[in-house]
Image (cartoon, rainbow, N blue to C red; front, side):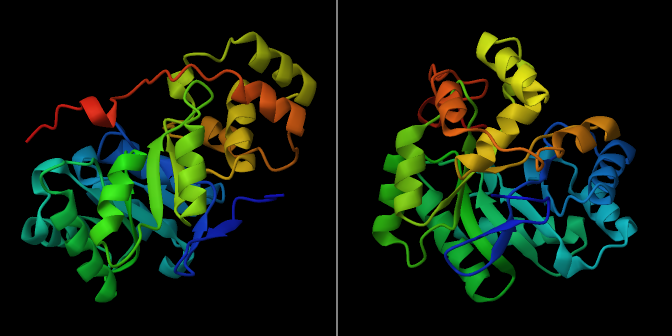
Length: 278
């Protein structure tokens, strides 16, 4: 049982990644993201997930500095955006992110979306950055099974993480199994699906049973299905509340009930039908 915010999963290269972290998608740079990240770190979070396209890396970096936690105790993720994909441009984008974050290294760097024409060259750049020790782990985001199979045909290093949209309405069981079978850690973005189905009768029933919010039920389900989760919030009380999920455990029967909510319903884009903005 995962018992605390500091508990980690071990990636296939031995790097330890927290099971639970803070996402900062659509969190405004400056004081908003600084406050959000500092509140999370104060509450015990050690993993922060940003991306170049979020345009808040500077604020994340400032918050990390101001939080006063030793760098080696934190796990910082960023991602290369679609228009920066390709070998040389990925290397340049990585160093730009590092500069904005004001860090010496990243813990995890991801390909943000599978841009068909460039993701293999992008991956070669990721491998170079990894071999040079600039990043502790490398991975992908929004990759379907066929993207992963295609990438792995030529890759020297198998991705350590695949960050995808994952919640009870989009359980992606085949993808989860594929990743588990290939030692790729699945990670959930938008784990709460922006609160769209908190009033589902099954979640309401489980909230009463466990005396937890619908959000807490879902986040606990993430962990018990072996998925790293990074809920976003800019409110300190919600950041604390989201992480209050380590004092209970869902039964197998209740996990199956949540699994049954799947409708292959996305709140974000489908990677196979995504208009890559350049």
